[in-house]
Length: 157
Image 1 (cartoon, rainbow, N blue to C red):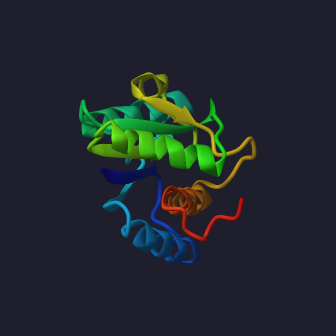
Image 2: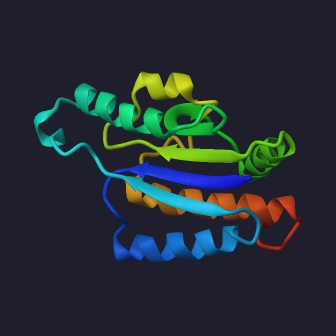
């Protein structure tokens, strides 16, 4: 199973990039990993938030394959602890999912068309985080889930 991380927005700041690269390298011991930063539409400054979300959703939906397992990170999604996340990912692997995509929306969130296409909506927390920091938190949590699956020492329960 391949893990894709998609994020709408700007490239990572150096302090985020280093952490994301480190955890991505660690995850690669378990699953192939790829990051894609999807730029906001060029004329987004002149759009209202709804228009911007619609444009972003078109880009995301055009890139998503019918067999891709899409996980939309959304404040209204279901929360999981780290052990539940590990089990969730393992279940997808057991189901022979070829590619799982974790999608971080843009500044205004994800359009309903993406949320309806998503196979699962996940909330990292009830707290609000900067989008770049979400990338780092997400990478760390996926790495943590991998170590839980293998009963390795990183996670202390």
